[in-house]
Image (cartoon, rainbow, N blue to C red; front, side, top):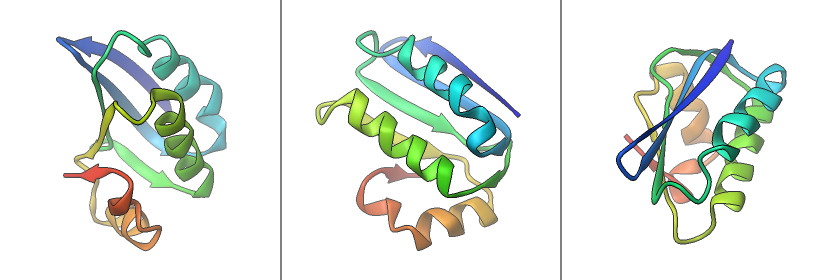
Length: 98
C-alpha cells in the first residue's frame, strides 16, 4: 500500500496503490494535505488499487470536505471490484467517477 500525490498543472493527482484501507490513512492525508490550496481539482487514480473498504470511503469524504465545495474531485480508473463498491456506496452522487 502506498499513496503518492503530484501536481500536474492545476490538478492534484493522488495514486493509491494496493489496499486502500485504514493502514494508509496517514499517507493519504499527508498526500492530499500537501496539495490543498495549490490545485483547482483532484483526481484519485485507483488503477492500481486492489481493495477498498469503508475506511477508504471515509477518507474520500474527508478529502471532499477539506478540499471544499469549489474543488472538483474525480475518482478514475477503478477496476470492476472497486467500481462496484463505489456504486453500492452511491459515490457517483458525490464524485465524478470515470
